[in-house]
Length: 305
Image (cartoon, rainbow, N blue to C red; front, side):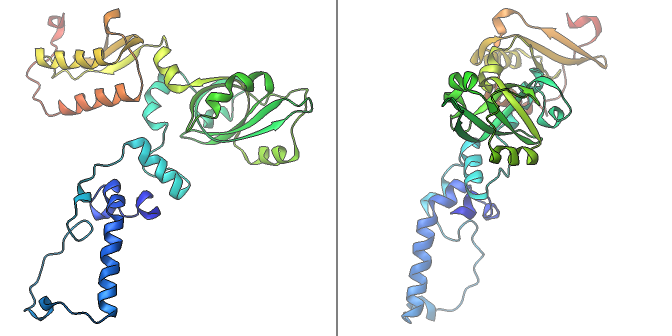
């Protein structure tokens, strides 16, 4: 089970979900074969002339579980983390990379050289609560992104209001913190001081909110590449359908090439979107489906109006 969840059996040519669903049937079949072998039970078919058979793919025999569709990306990554202790095929923050860049969030790698207040997009990987000398709850929160890891200290005043989102399952956050900040409460224990030396980044937490909320509420425009070979009415209708599906508050800018120059077209308020992983996934799928369409209609100089 752990081998399947960790991706070690991907070469079988079936989805991980299918392999796991067929695991019981596979084990039962193997146990029956082993039992027959130990009891010297022989099938009448064993006396028939040998016929060379082509190896069967997948698990080696037909069963209904083989058609089980693959888990979604979130479930796949969760099982990798469970079985391996780390993410293998991707990272939960990977779908947010465009929005994190749009929002101007720093990477933890860049934070190493920063001072003062910073904004980062992170995944919470661990949390340890403790009490101050006054008996108030505070927390040491372990974080990571695509470039590194670190720890954020939340003192009682900030930890209380944020406790629920920090404890959320697989919390992805836009986090605001101060680098190398110290506090007069001096509540660090010996364990925390030992951990500090081994971490890349140490922050004092100021605020945090779900990363998806930060993506959808931002005033920063969403820049969408638009293929110049997609100028038919049907292309435009499909493009608008994606915008309408993800209607929200973020302005959209279309980016395209015109006579070798990069141009930006600002769309009106009607076409504002709620940006996030699903929006970019839908837009990438539409763009990819148009990749091989001949460029019969191109923007041409002043005629592009």
